Every structure is written in C-alpha cells, then in structure tokens.
Length: 189
Ligand SMILES: [Cu+2]
Image 1 (spheres, protein in one colour):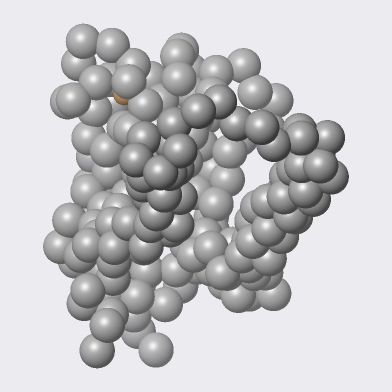
Image 2: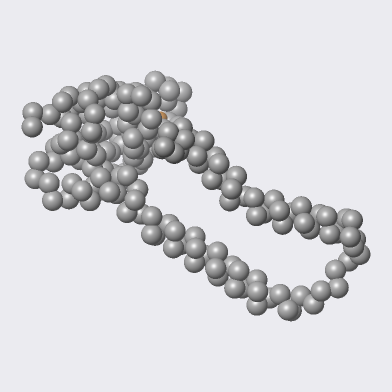
C-alpha cells in the first residue's frame, strides 16, 4: 500500500523530515531555554561533556558506516548484478561516450536476459543513465576518460518498451542533447 507513496519521491521527503525532527526539537529547546528561561552564559563544566561527545560521535559514525555497509546488497544495481553472477546468457554491450552521443554495440534486448553494459568515455566525463519508459531512472553509470577498465553494470530488464538513455554528468553545451534509446522486447522463453 505504501509502495506508491515511496515511489513518488514523497517517501524520501517524509523520511528526511522525520530524521530532522529531533534536531528541530533540540534547536527549539535550546532557543527556548537560553532566551526565555535563563539567558546568562552557561556555567556548565565542559570537561563533563567531553566523554559524552566522544560517545555520541562514535555512535553516529558506527550507525552511518553500519547502515551504508549493511544496505549495499539492497541497492538495485548490486542485487541485479548478484542475481546474474552465475547466469550464462549475459549479453555484453559496449558503450562508448563522446561529446555528445553514444556508440552502443547493441540497442535491442529481451526481457529477463541480463545485460552487462561496459562503458567508456573518449573525451570528458559523461554519464549513462537508463530511464524506464514511465520516466523513472533505472540506473546510472559514470564514465570517466582515461580509465584502463570500463565502468560496468549488469541489468536485467523486466518490462518491454522504449528506454531512454541520458547523460547525467554535465559535459558541455550540448549535454542536454546527449540521449539515446534502447528497445526491450518480450523474451522468447
Ligand atoms: Cu553530459
């Protein structure tokens, strides 16, 4: 039921507000105490708070690193690549970006068949973002010039349609025109 809420982007906005609420409360509390209750300089002994500050910073670092590391496998690009690791039917596609177009070795794919996009940039920084026909970004790769290995990503398309490719790294005056299309058709199996 909540899926449509989260998929619109409002979910992320609501979550951000929710996480900021404690800070807003602390801010209002401090303003209230120091302006209305007691506006004189604080007499608190700072040394008493040093230990608590270290524990707080340590806790924040632990949570930050823990949540990031723990959620890696839930990222769509990672789970999609893991699911396809043992697949023998991966299609390899070479993407080469040059201001302001793409050279893509294959543009038509089948639903359910994993595709490994390997991208390179021939001149400057470019992006390779694939949009679902309904306008949502499915994934994006950053293509950097001068790399020995290509940037690669495995994606399995689950719906047929015309997918738009856009560059999401600003690369010059015609950056907005740097687009392409991929066609996904229903699979045979
Ligand atoms: Cu660009």
